[in-house]
Length: 465
Image (cartoon, rainbow, N blue to C red; front, top):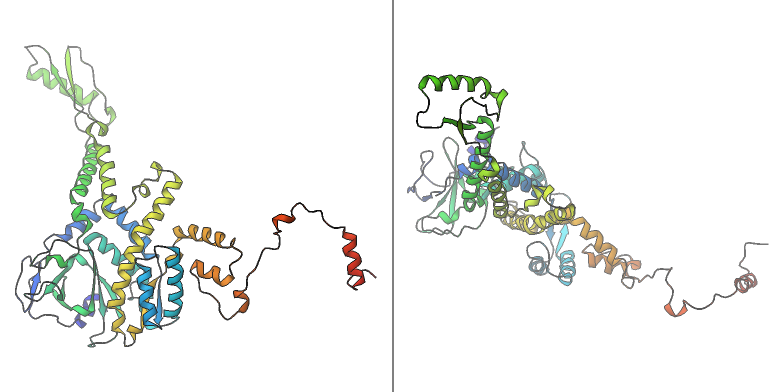
């Protein structure tokens, strides 16, 4: 069964039908909010036709999809609320807060090994795995300003979702009820004809849009490419100009006769034939022929550097990276050191990937979990500890905490944010390294070993008979 057949299960969210590519606002029991920007151009001319935009979005979406999502059962609502408050946008702001957050997490959340929610997220639909679904969802958000997913409940009112499908956000229209322009009442998918989708079946994960209007345009996510439209266009034109110059080559210059008399038409044609033979053509690239008369020369072959193309490309690339919150050095590693590259990737993960995941986490918990009969008992949480760029920090923390010998093993685990073992009494004992000696005994002479041997023999402790 293809996606079009599945969409027949979607209950009509509003009455009436609309023509395809509706560009205005029309009353159909509710008001269709027209998307004021042509987001289809963001897909065709932004992502698909701009190498820099494509590189930024594809890299970001792939990195985003590598973070695993785990399911937990909420066992203590009070501690859970405190845990959420301490966690903020991914990580607590201080180490003390981190330790407290991990303690609250152990009290408030219990890991779930198996549940239909996890099965659905691991295989959202027959065409995609979990990582591919998340990559598509985030990719659409970066391109259009919103990532959209639809839950297929098999036509059962209030039923649990059977599949999750990522929808093309550029083909989604939002419907709101007049005169309330704050909350959507449904969505419409344009795919040759109009399919009305119920609000509760659709996840519309978007960027904040400050362009508030009574026509409801603020309900659409603000695409980064809207802010970077001029920069992206500038980059595309610079790329096109460079490609055209390389393909066309064009005239290298103009020859003209000096003096008042000039050349006759016959002389000009003869000279042109000679130029075609000795100058023009691929075999004579950048070659200028010599004539037996006094001639002048005007150079038309400006280089990319003279035209400022390389400067335009470099600056536009950096501007586009800034629009998407993407470190420019990742696209051009040769311009920085290995340390700069590693630091940039780590900063990208910390300041971009993790906050974006926290946003999706909250939306998924609010949208997906209530569809299951016991869903409100659970909580989805991304696991950032597996991100490779953060492993170095973890290694440093482990090495540092292992040197604080007065701590018990459980205190060390708590400091690192790991689960402690309260059932083993040895985990709450303090241990000291055996190779350490008091500073005041460093200069004392060692006793004669024979004395110690005699004491052991008298005590009957010896291997020698």
